[in-house]
Every structure is written in structure tokens, then in C-alpha cells.
Image (cartoon, rainbow, N blue to C red; front, top):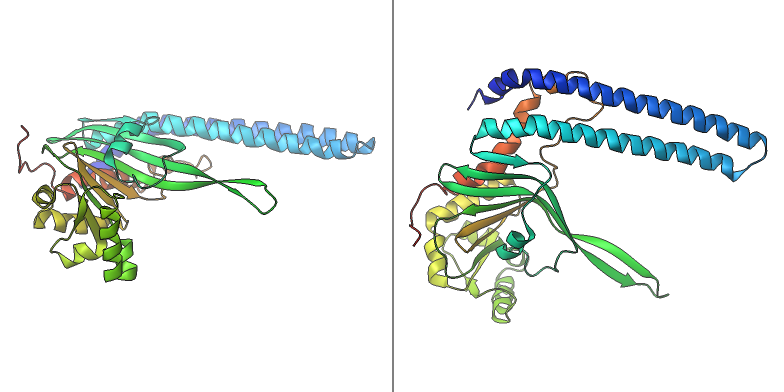
Length: 329
């Protein structure tokens, strides 16, 4: 697939040229709206100021700014939707014809809850996402999307005034893939922050957390020192957990974490592996509405989207999910 971006650019060139013209129209429309808003708002503000209208003269300038901001949001959203519908849909198919792309959809709340990856966090008060990709890669059924989950924290100051703050639980890529094994239990692989900071005492706290019912099952100690340094494992069935987390799988998880450069989480539940990759990069977004002319046709543009797609879909190869070690009943 070394020539995939070049081949895609060649095939998509007519679409990209048409889309570039569409972007130019959006910019022109925004410029006209901005010009008229400033001209009309400024003129009326000067007239009102001349008649001593005071604050009303300034208010009209704010109205003009609001109109300009709304116009930009509208044109930028139209550009984003056109890019995703006409370009990203084609690129996903180009990467793998068995995949489908739904820019306005995301992983369901049911799957998010089923994964138990954030079961100790408050239930999300806001749950949203985009860029759902689903289908089959070789033998593996997969679904993934960007997700952002938050809960609302309410506090009161010394004077009884109410303050609200939105706290992010997870933001990044969330993946659900077939593991082709019927699990009877639950196995969680979570970042090991306690032991990293507190050493043996941190491990004791993790074990106590499991005994108190804050985690499913019990804390499982694995043999790989690097894996133990990076992750903690909780499982309701220790034998099954070790059956899943073979030395080869453990190595692959460690290497996948290194490639993502992120505190990934995994769970093995209901015959699926769930993976959460925290990242604050907004994937699959178009170039800026005000990007230089023909930015879409630049040789470096499409390869960036191919890299983002490969990054998102890498879990299948990195965890070797297409190798069928087990057979479902």
C-alpha cells in the first residue's frame, strides 16, 4: 500500500478539484456577509453615535460580529460535511472496501458501558462522537469512532453560589473488535498509575480496590516486568485472563502502547476486545476553510489522512486479531 495515497489522489482528483471550487465559494460567501455586516453595522453605529444613542451604537457592532461568527460557523460546517462525505468516505473504501464510514455517527453508549473501561468514573452526562468506521478487516469485525464523554461537576462556594464544570472522562478513539473467543469472565487491562507513583504500596492499594469491589474480580500479576510497570490487570477468572493474555499478546499490547504514545485501556468481554486510545487530536477533519488554494491537491495532504486511518485501524494487526487461536462455540 506504499503507493495508496498517490493512487487515491489520482482517482479522487476530479472530486478534489470540484470540492476546492466549493470551498472557494464558501469563502467568497463568508467574505460578502462579513463585508456587508461591517458596512451596515458600522454605518448604523456611527449614525446612532451622532444622535447620542450611546450604548446602542456599540450594540450594533456586537450584532455585526455575531452575524460574522454565525456565517463562519455555517460555512465551515458545510465545508466539513462536504469533505467528509466526498473524500473521507472514498478514502475509507480505498483503504479497505469492506469498511463503511458514517461521519455523523459514533460507537453506541451500550458498547461504551459494556466495555467497563471507565466503569469507576461517573456516568457520562454528555456523550458524543463522530467518524464511525465499521466493517470487516480480513476475518475481524470491527467498529471504531471518536468519542468524548464528560460528567458535570457541581460545587458551591462559601457564599452558596453554584458552579458547574464539565470534566472529561474519555476523549479519543474507541474501538470494539471481535476477539473470536467466548469469554465467561471479564478481563480489564488498565494503566498502572498507582504502582508507577507508589511502588509496592500502590500495588497493595490496587489489590485492596479489587477486594472492596471497586474492580471486577481480583488483581492478576503477570510475568512480564515491562507490562507490569505499564498496566494493571483485573479479572473475574484468573485462568481465563492468563489464557487471553499470553506472552505474545502481552508483548503486542506493550508495543501497541509504545506506538500510540498513549495510556491505552483494553477489556476482554462478551467475545470482544475493547480498546480506548486517549488522544486530543481531532481525526479525519478537512483542511481549514481558509487554507491555501489547492491545498487538497497538494501531495502531502492525502497521506496524512491515510496515516490517520492506519493509526485507527492498527489494532487489528497490532493485536494479531486475525489469527484464530480459538474457535467460538
